[in-house]
Length: 220
Image (cartoon, rainbow, N blue to C red):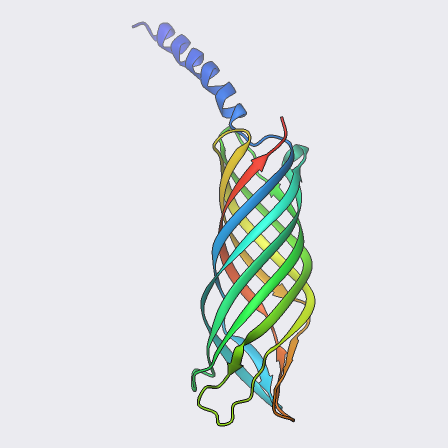
């Protein structure tokens, strides 16, 4: 095969592949997104009945999310997201064990930017602000304390999150993704105890998550 014929063949193949790559990118317009993921609260500081400098340790948890959004030109996406997470306390100050469950119900308004290219693989970054509702329950307490002080309560604070991930456009309508998230709250959470004079205050909430998502676009 002559060199000129080989070059012509490669250019023809590129011409056939290029439209397919462009079509494989996610379509513009409205979309919905669903996700499941793993969640972990790192050690967090708090105050127990006036005793400061206490740290809480947590077991791994999980979460789910649902979002309704719109993909604009130039890689911009905006969306409203609801997410729920559940975690279990392990201990405070790596000492006596605690028992109890923490729930995080959040509503976030996110802005994301897709680094679009000539492939269906698209990295993206973004962030959001909204509200966090943190609930402690399931007789949140020290099990060895007699009688135990129960810290079952809830609070709502403003929240924020940062997002970075990558998506794969299986078709123009369907994209699979994986992303990492750091989410926290503005201000501290306080949980009164069932015994007078005992309380947990100054809990600085923050969590890290990895979510696997599927996004369906209604756009053309």
